Length: 202
Image (cartoon, rainbow, N blue to C red):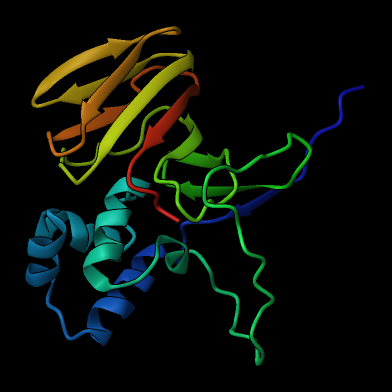
């Protein structure tokens, strides 16, 4: 019988309130945050109120605009009273074993599973993404870096610069992320994608 590896999962329930909290701490209006992140005022307002979900790359833009890491929007663990032990990571590689605990972040219809350990000098963010059917489409947007997606199972609508492309198993897309883009699962089953983005989100 196969052994199921442990998964550490964090929910997106606190993401909207955390965006509002960090935004107000910096004294920013929604308009200011929209201008800094490249996302629309209406979309950010819906995310803060829990009406819309936000993908990790879009959240990365918000995090950068607010001066926080992406993980801080999910992490509700109280701060400890001592400094954690920091183990230096090699700058040239990481090795991630299949039996190691994997971290998952859930945001709306999408579940992101991190596929590699943190590497001090590495810039790629490899993830396994499960995209549930339906949900509300995010606004198309651009951000710094590059993005690659390879469909393992299911189908995916991937819009690039206003043109929709239907991706099936074995299909992939690789783009400069500054081009407005978005993805959506309009089928009745979960779609699984290997996604690699730059820069790293965590």
